[in-house]
Image (cartoon, rainbow, N blue to C red; front, side):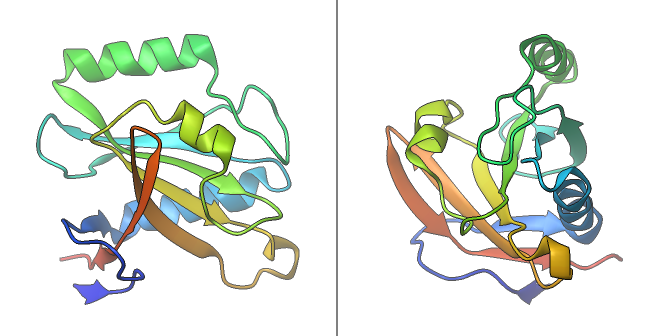
Length: 152
């Protein structure tokens, strides 16, 4: 494993498999100029992101996202049946830095989740994407370090 994320957190570290990191970036790139959104599910209580689940931005907007309610119900029901929880809740920002907005904070309803934001504001030039992870609990934003787990 190689540390990548910005270290500003006094707690655990998000460890994300390379293929899931790549999938989140690809989804953000594909949906640009609209915001992309989705989750990565993992076994309950494990903090292991294992199953990438891209979702539909019901707003289809470059400045706002909202999970499609029907799709969200189906995905959460499926996670319950598989004894999973959302380990990562992700979305992209298309013209601003990868930092939670007030709206993002108001939507943060999974206290155990890592909230990953990807900025695609340089997507037209296909430059580097900003990838950051946060914990958002009771309205408080804490940036956390993250690392990519290299394929075996």
